[in-house]
Amino acid sequence: MRKLTSPQLKSSYDVIIVGGGPAGLAAAIGAKEAGAESILIVDREQKAGGILWQCIHPGFGLHHFKEELTGPEYAQRFLKQVEEEGVAVISDAYVLDIDKERQVTLMSSVYGMHSIKAGAVVLAMGARERTRGAIHTPGTRPSGVLTAGLAQKLVNMLGYMPGRRIVILGSGDIGLIMARRMTLEGAEVLGVFEIMPYANGLNRNIVQCLHDFDIPLHLSHTVAQIHGQERINAVTVAPVDDKLNPIADKGWEIPCDTLLLAIGLIPENELSRQLNLRLDPVTNGPIVNSAMETSMDGVFACGNVVHIHDLVDFVTQEALSAGRNAGEYALGQRRPGDNIRLVPGNGVSYCVPHTISTHQTHTVYMRVRKPHERCSITFGEVYEKKLRYAFPAEMITVTLKPEFLETFHGDALVVDVHDRE
Amino acid sequence: MNATLTHYLCIGCPLGCRLEVEDDGNDIVQVRGHQCKRGENFAKEEHKDPRRMVTTTVAIRGGELPRLPVKTAAPIPKNRMQDLADELHKVVVTAPINLGDVILANPLDIGTDVVAARDIAAV
Image 1 (cartoon, each protein chain N blue to C red):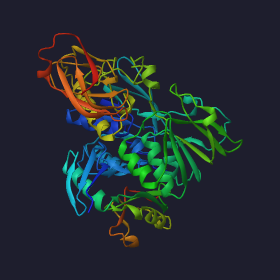
Image 2: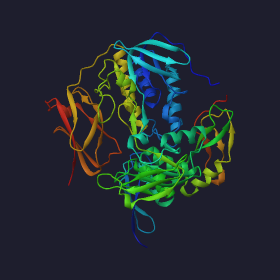
Image 3: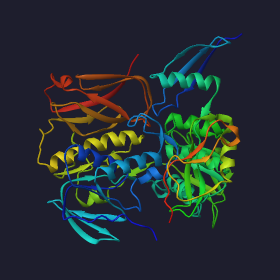
Image 4: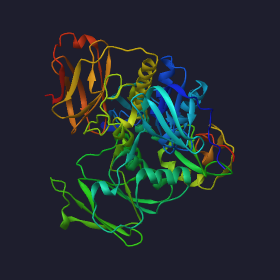
């Protein structure tokens, strides 16, 4: 029998955090820093820590801890800190609803249905993987087609190998990392197929996970057909034309027993939708102001539920700030409202936060639509940041200082990317 | 001796700097493209003696989970990764295990230990 963490629940908390992954854990620490005394994290898994437990590879913590850690080490450090700070963590529990007065309804195997008052709420539900249904791959519906993250959990935590001859669709980081994992575990990875003309994962993963193991990466290719009745036995792969449609007569068949899908993540916003939060159609996450507060008073959001991050360190940074703001809100401190909207312009797919103010320094996270070399990111005419390169797969962080905004008198700043000579 | 210019992608951190190593045929003349000391060191090492951290799992008995994540305490030569992973397939440990516990001391003489990357409680 598993032992569940089951602290005595209070009837109200300064801050309640929905989700105990990297965002939720850092938000709790941020709230504590701001002076919040009672903090509750509600996590649906058996143990808080989120996706980090299955991400056994290194590369975490370089920004936050200034040393390179694996996912489990990163999770364990944060959990320890959260425990030392006296934050209550309940696992195996779901938040069902939050009303306008921030009365939070949760359900748990230990506590049953429970209603708790929150001074402020932080949404940190993370993301889930896109599945085959999202891309409508033709063919039969056999077993052996699964998302890369599920395979990661099976291999790294539960000790099951999903197959021996693996094809990977999509060059997202989890797919690249699983190409290496499956190879080290004795499987044969036959290739990674990416529909776009450039890779979606971080370059270091392409080097470390594919090049190191001689695993071919086929850009501008996709899986055109899945074959097999009970179990997948082959896929047809093919190059794509400029409209991303497979060119059937150039396709070929690859016998395999497993197809891993690494085709992106979607913020997990069932709760946000239920609360009628305003959502950004590009990020699929809540629209947030510079305090990471959503369109509902006192409800903040951070991490992958807002937009998909490539580094857990950036999640941590964003969540610490969201947690601090939530803590201040719970203590009745209100800061000036935002007076400038950020509008994604030429070549920019999104900016988070969606609004900023002139009274303090802001960190703006953004992504470009296509790869650029030697380019500039401009915020209207007030600020320009020169970059040696910009890739859609690499989130760009820009620090905007109040002095840049001194001469700006409009209410909307357009953010563009330009190529430089 | 032929002078060479070789390009590497930095894997020291997720920023992925493009590094350039100029070699006069005997030794490295200059490293360019790095943004930190770590990047410069990586370029030199990748040029002379490429190394990688290895992370994998070993079987664990009597624990809250059946697999324990482990890592090399230091990077090992790139061409020894698969040998080490294969060696670790033979290992079975018993819970409880604490983060940092040495699982194998200098296996296959790779020059470093393999250590546990998390706690796993006994059940």
